[in-house]
Structures are given as C-alpha cells and as structure tokens.
Image 1 (tube, rainbow, N blue to C red):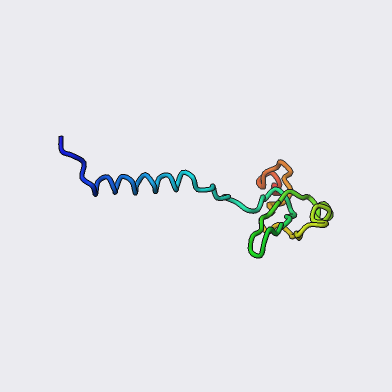
Image 2 (cartoon, rainbow, N blue to C red; image 1 turned 135 degrees about the vertical axis):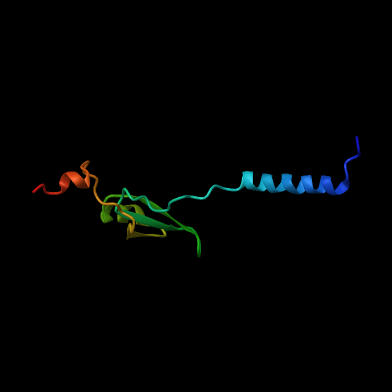
Length: 95
C-alpha cells in the first residue's frame, strides 16, 4: 500500500469542509407569501432586514398586530382568493 500523498489529504479536507458548510447552512424559505391569506404584515428587524407574516384575513387584524411594532400591513400580491371547494368546471354554465 502506498502512503497517502499530501495533496490527496488536502483535497479530502477541502471536500469535507465544503460538505460541512452546506450541511450547516440555514435553510432558505421557499415561499415568502402564503397564498391562503389576503393580508401580510411586514416586520422590520433592521435597516434592510425584514420578514413577512401572511396570516391575516383582514387589514384590521393585521393593523392590530402591527400596532406598537416596526411593521406595516400590505395586501398579499399572491393571494389565491377564497376557497369555496368547487372547481372551475362546476361553476361554468351548462348550455
């Protein structure tokens, strides 16, 4: 068996460090806006650091939650509309 060469050991350390970095990275949010709610609260945590809470049915609910906080309410641009349980095909008229 040949002794391990220094550059192979270095390459293995680099790969291990890269894998550890990927494993420890914080997961990214896939979707910022929840399409089930029409109103979102934008909460500011710093100059350019903020997040959204899209879980309000009315602007009044959102404004009550925003009161006294560094936050503002906004209409959810991805709101999917009310879910009534019927498909579009069932709603169309039959002639």
